[in-house]
Image (cartoon, rainbow, N blue to C red; front, side):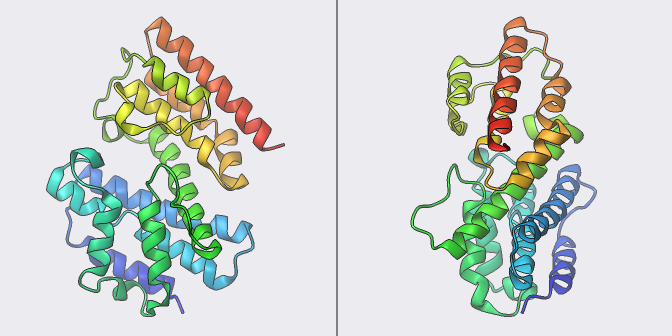
Length: 255
C-alpha cells in the first residue's frame, strides 16, 4: 500500500538538506507538488484504480528529486551542462535505500525507476509492458503541462538563462522540425527562441486529452510567446506561424 501523506512528509524531510532561500530550489519544489497533483488528476480522469492513482501521484513527487543536487552541485537545470537529472534522481533514491522513506513496499520500485528515467527522454523506451507504459505517459504529460505553467508565470531566467528574449532569432532547422510535428532535438537548438519552440513542441507528445485541453484553454502558447516580446520581424512571423500550427494541431486532436 502507498501512503501518500507519509511520502509527502518524507519529501519535506528530504528538502531540509537544501537551501530553500535559493529561487531555483523553491521553483522546483512548487513544480514537483504541481506535477504530483496533475498526475493524480490524469489518473482519476482515466479511471485508474485508487492504488494506481496514489502511485501516479508518488511518481510525480519523485520525478525531479535529482534536481536538488543538480542545483547544489552545478547551479543549473540544464542536463548537458551538468548531468541527467533523472538518472541522478534514481541514484539518490535507490543507491542507499532512500526510496523506502517514501514507500515501504518494493513492489513498485521497477515502475518508479522506469517512469522517472523516461520522464525527460525524447521518447519513451521501446518494449515496455502496458502497465509501466501508462505511468510513463502520465508523468511525461504532467511534467510538460506544468512546465507550460512555469514558463508563463515564473522567472524567464531559470528556463532560458536570460531575462530578455526580445532580440532572439529563430533557427530555420528548428522551425522546420516543429512544422513536421517533431520533437526538437535539444542539441540542435542554437538560440533561446529555439528553446522556446522546443517547449511549444511538447504539444506533439501529450498522451492524455486533459493536458491538451488545459494548454489550449489556458492559452499557454500565446502567453509564452507574448512574454518574450520579440522585436525581430522574422522571429515574430515565425512564432505566429508556430502558434497557428500548434493550435490547429490541438484542435484536430481534440475533435
